Length: 139
Image (tube, rainbow, N blue to C red; front, side, top):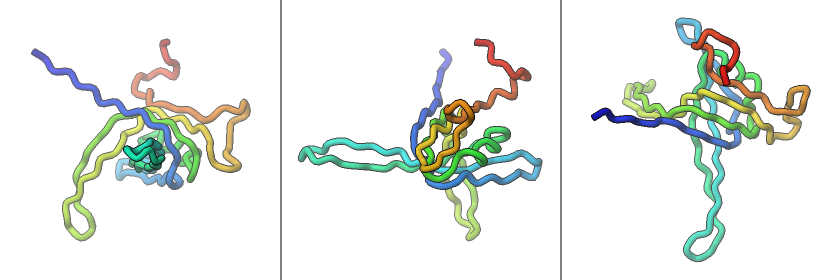
């Protein structure tokens, strides 16, 4: 019997800061940014509770370059991707574990004052489809 798993994340939140872009030793661009996901609900006492969940996001290649240009503090961003947990050693030598969303699709919707938009008033969208070898989507 085969086991099938699904690792898909869909987020809509506001950028906590401008996307930070670096290059790997192989020359590939990688962008890191965080999204604040707002949630409100009523507790048992019928009080309105506001909660913010912070999510780390990482984008690679062309998506990193797009994030660098358009993901700025306060902008509303729609992200699709997958969860990834990785371990690393910090500067003091202790082991750290981080869970983040590896971005596969990114749409900047706006939300910040003076948010830049493209010419037709729509937000900026991109997805990681460069491995297919074609610039068009077949559907």
